Image 1: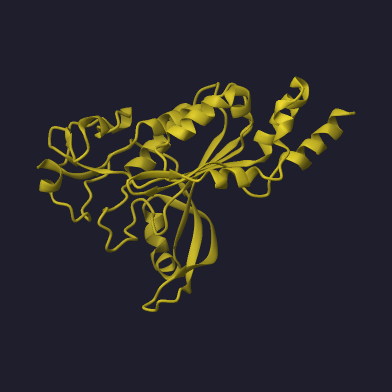
Image 2 (image 1 turned 90 degrees about the vertical axis):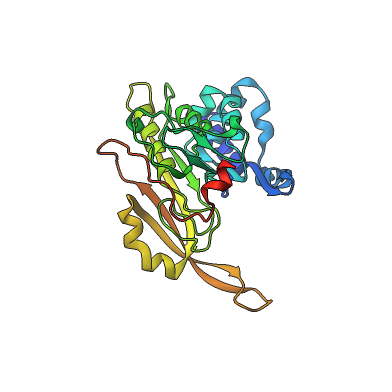
Length: 299
């Protein structure tokens, strides 16, 4: 059978019109609860046995499977499932990826002292220092509540960008509802503002890891969903924070407006891209929104 025909068969058998879910979990006290059914159902109907048959067929099928599908990590995770999966599928399959989606959680907060040390309720091992990106080095450490950047995120960007070959890959970072870094969408949010440190450092990693000869083309887009009226009123402010709005779509979600029965509320789904870096990355100022005082972190 000609290779061209085999590839058409693989595409018919292995490509899904919806994302292939690799991980799905939600936080339910006292910890994460995984949803294996969501993972299983996302590949139901796909002939994944082709990936485990004769080596030649398996290799050809894997090329199509990883190149044509969107792979998603949904719900709560600490980014380690993403790192583990990227390592598990190997360099060849990683190079074939073209679309990857992952949920991005709101960073935890810590209290930054004037000497740069950080205090918090977590045990010291969980207190991430200011990330040592060269452009973020500074002798100034404003005291206040700051975002902690999970250092494992850097490895994800590194593994996606630093391939010896590979097609362009787009990484979609899914934000929680009514969340845009640098923009106060939650007027009564006890977690405080999702600051700009994480988007800034991600762009720093992106620039570093894609500026060498052995890198592939990597695009990073942020997927957001917010109240439609608020989005339309604050569109200019969002763009002034360094975001480019590269796509938008009116939508609806179920909610409550003083009635026990849910109603459809107008929302806006939009796609964001950080503006290109043109100067040094400066750390964001301490969060001025969070209600938690210094004593919450220090005592």
